[in-house]
Image: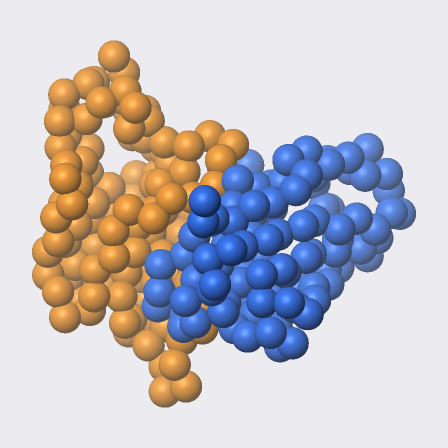
Length: 114
Length: 113
């Protein structure tokens, strides 16, 4: 089945720096979503970008989508120690029968050092 | 408060036992999902349900069973047939349709002794 693949697997930065995570997927999608997971917790939805959108902002988050390259990036600006978490992209499948589920990648583990 | 709850938070099981994980939501969502997460890994879909009294297998359904008798509840049973059940289990719900935002519960960590 199709799957988003995040890159890098792990990222360590200093507070105040920007963090960029990438996601690649295999087949046509309706939308792509990014989620955050703190250690030992459930996932929290961050942002959804539709297939006809190229860029979306939410606070310090900026998401881009390039459907021709089947890739997306998540940028966190001016990072804080509280941003330390794992970040996952998730895609649905744009099929004739409609999509009923999301497929999650393996995630990028972000560590922001104070 | 609207939300999705899972219980228990930690669960210990002896080999050969069946255990049931609870998932309840009061968001009035039609769709509910069960995922398994292993250390350092992403989420893998076990079962999902788009409507009451209907559910479908996900990518790793073997050794698991579910029921969807009520809109707000989607319990997952981990049977003795599941060879390696130790994992973190996450339940989620959404408006019907796989392209919608999913809301996650806090998870249940299952350990087989």
